Image 1: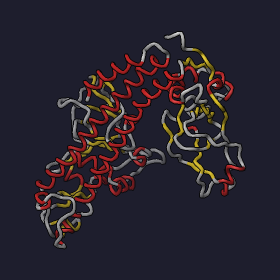
Image 2: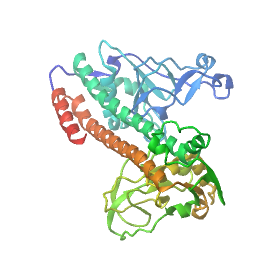
Image 3: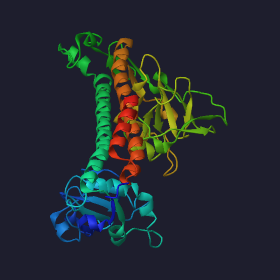
Image 4: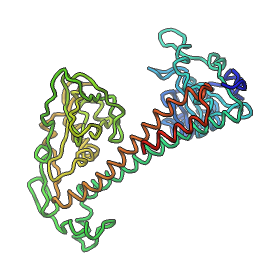
Length: 439
């Protein structure tokens, strides 16, 4: 570490440090139709805040102790449930906060907001150790103002801050790209197999929009009646248990170590999972690559927890929570059809309506789920659909792998950079080398 680095307090680096406030919740005029973004601590989660869950009115602002937080300030959660206290965020929009947030308006002549954000982010465990109080231990503004920060010269703060921010920008772009790619797949699923857009277009004598002539030629130009409803001519309408394997039998020896996925690692958006661990097999759902996992218990199903299994090697069998339903399409349906069906709102609502059991522990009934009607197209249409969405799925998985690599690399470099143990040229070289091996 250079002798130019010095220890300063948070207050030394700020123009202002203040907490927010909460308008009286019993006055609707303080909230209804509000346009002023208002942050609670649960939204302070190591990220850039660009929108908020809640808003207050001008009247609510004037009748509370909250204050305007300028853009690129640092928000520190002082208290909240679980691990909330000690977390930090940067606001990318002008907003206000509740009293549980400590807002740091950085003095640009002495500190770089990005550097200070990453420094405080790396200090989470130490900040948590300062909490005091009774049953719910909290931080307070005095503790945060006095917290020491080891700072290099301003020019170096900026370089380190920009370097670390570039990781977050790339991670955000990859995740946003994945949301777009999955949306494309979901839109195609609904267009072809729910709304039958290409078939209706041909039935009216038009060419289906957005399809190559060779693909459009695969679709019929009329409909026929079946016992389960109207379908494109030559296609089938089958029950889910006829079109899919539901919880297919797979063997894993108890006591053997195998990849394990718990419910907490399955997201409410996107098919990728946050983490898989090796664990001795007991009882639970068994799955292989190409399976879709659907949460069967409340509130996980209602929250949207679903995943596509593409994280195992070809010969592996994984296992997970007993609260997963495993779905695997039968030929000619492609594997990703299962995941897109699990994301389809009508299917999810049907699954939710099939739930039974005691309040708070309701579960989907497999026999009822098995009666859901699924459209099965011709093999030719299924194959071209599988090719399109399979390519999207692979891009999503590759982007997720890169995002996870960037996250791990950022978190490895962060404490060494902001402590002066690692210089920026060395960090840049290490980053380029590692990413060249991943991409």
